[in-house]
Image (cartoon, rainbow, N blue to C red; front, side, top):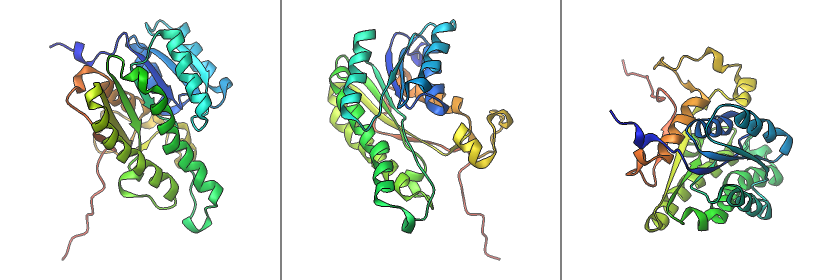
Length: 258
C-alpha cells in the first residue's frame, strides 16, 4: 500500500505558538517528514531550544526560530518575510497560537476579554492575511487550531469559546474564497489534550495515556500532530473548509427514563 500521499516532504511551514505543547509537536512531526519549519512564539528564548533540537537531530527538515507576537501585524509580516528569505517560499500555515483563562463572565474585564480575542482570532487573521501571497503561489494549506469550546461553548471560558467559534467560521468562509487559488483551509477542534498547561490544571500527564485505548477523553499532542500532517498532505485533498473534532469518546447524555 502506498503512503506517499501522506507525505509533506519538501514543504515549508510556519507553526505559530510552537514553543511547547501542540505547536511544538506539530513542528517536530513536520521536520520528521522533511518539512522546513519556522517555529515562533512571543519569546525568542522559548522557541530557540525547539529549533536547536530539530536542527541537531537527524530529522531531514530544518528549523528556524523567530520571535513573533501574532497580535502585532508588523511582527507577523516580519515572520513571513523571514520564512521566505530563509526557505524560499511558504506552503503550510498552522495557526496554533492561542491563550485562555478561566473566569465567570461577570468577572472578565474588558482588557481580559480583548486579550483573548486578540490572540486567538485577530492573530489568526494577521498570520493568514500576511501569508496569503505566498500560500497562493502554487497552492498551499492553512490549518487553524480551534477547540471544542468553540463548537459548543465552555463554562468559565466565554472569551476563548467565542474566539474559537470565530476561527471555525473564518475557516469555512476563507476555504470558499481561497479554493480558486488552490489553497485548502481546514480546522482542528481538539478536546482535552495532555499539554503542559492541561497537566498543571488537571494533573494528567501524557506519560499516563495509552494511545491504543479507545475509551478515553484526553489525547496526546502527537495525535493532534498526526491530524495536522494529514490535513497538510495530499491525502486530504478533498477535505476543504472542514473542522475536524478530535476529542476521543463524545460526551453523550446517559440519562434514561425509568
